[in-house]
Length: 347
Figure 1: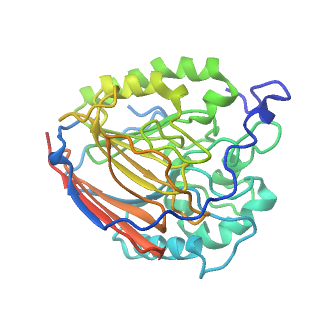
Figure 2: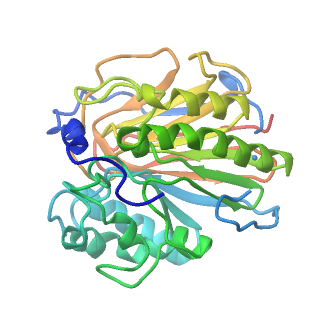
């Protein structure tokens, strides 16, 4: 698919994608949880033409989104502290990769602005798998250079792990997938629903086929997407209902983990099905948009959300095991300094 997908004027529809941050809500208690309390089960070829052999090793990664405020280069900022913590662990080998859930540089990811992000996060770029968020990362006609940055075509010549792994340019409005050990990750660009819904609908069957092939190969499945479907409301966003056809596919294939951003806070759900029920073989979503931008209050309390807070910046760390089990820890870096940790057994 080409980079310019829509007629001029569609970009204006979603200019309000992220508004000024609301004050943080009052602190909630630190939580430690086990997903088995609400249910479990397992769930697993590469859309880029690259397949890795399954491994018995665990996959260790950090995840976060909604990272760098406009022109921020301060190492003392929440963005700078998150970057430093993740980069140190990538360098010492305790983390394998960083998975970025979108909204890298506010207000827009053009080459001239991405230099600020690169000053803090650039050392993590070669180990970063990424997805783009609409309008801050990609909006045809206004903001369309994050994918160039990730391919080493602006600011620096370093390529992201995505581009190196797949060996090609990756359009910010296209899906891709990759394997890590016995896990298969599909990266689903929710921005495409905003700017080319026909293409987004066509992706549904393509991604279904990709997930089916990975599952048939015995891999457990995870999905990365920016706009969360399972989420509490905020003043700026409610659930991204446009993605429901994709959610149905993820559920049909028993995807095990969903990683998202967008909301400017942190949430963890029970393992949930496609009709908002906590079930043993559900999809557990981690909404991690605490990378450094201003935080937002929650305005609703869906029953499937098990833990959330909006006063702490930080990132999620996960360890995925070959048998489909995993552990998680939210690593706080600033603000309320809340944490969340737990585990889910194999199904």
